[in-house]
Image 1: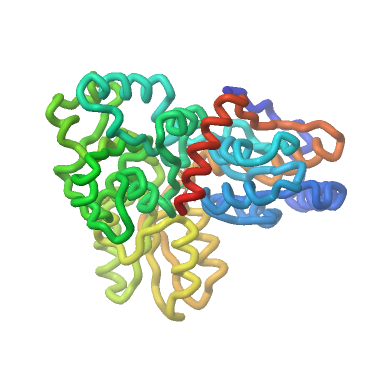
Image 2 (image 1 turned 135 degrees about the vertical axis):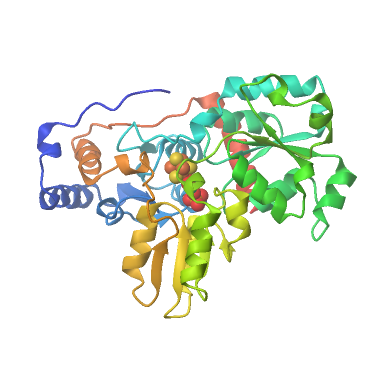
Length: 377
Ligand code: 13P
Ligand code: SF4
């Protein structure tokens, strides 16, 4: 589904923050419990102020799945999150994305056609019965459906390790490398090579167990032997926000704050993750800041709106971005109070704007992959 956002009417674009806040408050009052507003941690404060639930992509997917009573779910996040919410909510619930242009450049790095091509090419070299596809939540519903049809599961940054262990068929407490050898299973992980690689390392695998799959090249740019040897085939995708963080940033922070704490999101490169004290999803980062000793200086590698919010909400610690020149996630940034007011006003007027719908067949297969994830974790 590709639809472009039409420009907002002038009276939204020209409205003052106070006028927009008044509109949103009035619409929320009018809609009452028929509405839930979900806010991903990377959203602007002017949007987060109205969220009934704040969360990481996993927490919000779960929240949407558990709130079958709300007629309208306004998802302040990006397209793939709203799609997942649509898949997990009932047919009588409408999921709305305040700005249709809020996509995710990483999710766009893997499309159904290239993943199907990869699968077919791999089938010429290895037994695909041993290959389990795992897609990061940051992917289209079509890819989640592919994964559902091929015996795999979705993962998020907070549960990737458990999902990959499940995909490899590991038993509880089993050594992952020995377990993968026992089951003979392997994982095709997309679209984020970094999350895949960091998860594989965290489970005890070595670089020699992993290969990067370049979708622009025949057989992913690999020799047959590489494809046969690899336990992990890592799609060549990345997040441009998290890939900006470099080891020099961590080194500079440590030099200035030798007792400081380094928290990084697993979409960062392995070199950066290797130097961190804590690696985790946006929720993990928040919990670590909340429980830090007062007076601690904390350097964070994730999207800047979350870092600023944590700095403002936790004056008892010093929160800094590891990269002083970070840019925001430009697609998350598209959602603002004006777009939120516009969709809510539409609902009050009986006009459901920017509804995100996933076709029934895709939704059924994607639900299988999402529900596997929810069952694993
Ligand atoms: P979380 O799963 O940590 O919310 O991250 C989602 C995301 O898009 C990070 O870039
Ligand atoms: Fe996508 Fe990166 Fe933005 Fe997350 S921060 S939504 S992965 S572009």
